[in-house]
Length: 107
Image (spheres, rainbow, N blue to C red):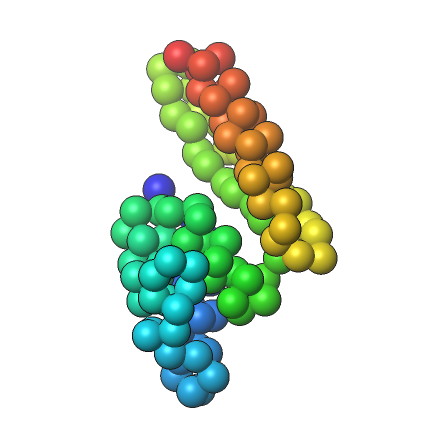
């Protein structure tokens, strides 16, 4: 399942390209923004997502998932908000831990 914020981030960056304030050839991390867009959308790459969110000045970090197993289905939504993306790894780890814990309980 693709996270909605990744699609929104891709859309926001594409808008910057359309209005001429960004280019798909712009360096973003070790690669171009075009590469990062592809990695984020096709591979659900969170590092690419963070770089693109910073480029479009989005600092919210959140995730949502529907976990369905034989024990039932649960919707998880986690939202964090900060002024910048400097602590993304620290905010990402608890989201992953919560997802793993619920997945293990449903197995």
